[in-house]
Image 1 (spheres, rainbow, N blue to C red):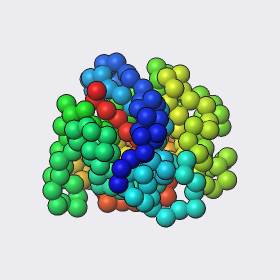
Image 2 (cartoon, rainbow, N blue to C red):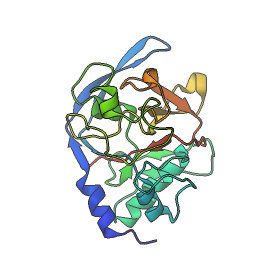
Image 3 (cartoon, rainbow, N blue to C red):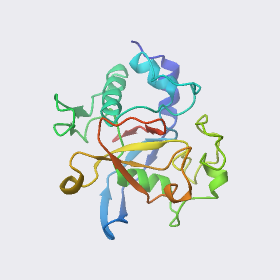
Image 4 (cartoon, helix red, strand yellow):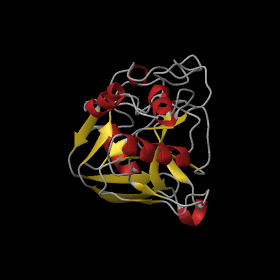
Length: 230
């Protein structure tokens, strides 16, 4: 397929540039903290929509949700393939190389490539917090679609309040895959996802909340957001 240039221009216009930084992450299960140094990067202001996903892949997973809702029912493997396809259609160098392993143990990321990729979880949390230090960057009902206000369905992106840096829906609406393996010693190839979804209660709707699943896992409240290294 050939990507509609209007969609590509809209995506590029909504990529927010962030400077180098240091982020402290915490795993609540093991009660451990670690510091991650981030290089400058760009992150999309909104999650990938069903409209954009279908424009790149030819179709989106079946759903009654509208074209401007976050695409869901996509696995981690689906997400990285989407990133590579979008990069090629945009004339950029793809970030990912992979083989045939369904558990994605053979996937590598070229962090110097100029194409689209998933954010690391440190990049994701840094962008989500936007300089704040609390559980979330604003009042839950104001910033997020969640169990208490969603009506049991996803909503169009950017219809709740953004954080101070202009990012929408990092809390609520749909969980978002990140690049990272969660804990290889305990969970093998499971990958991290962040942010909470339209059916989650407050405990899952926090900037620091970390969840994980197999890279082939698909569910109706899990999607992804795009990053670029440059």
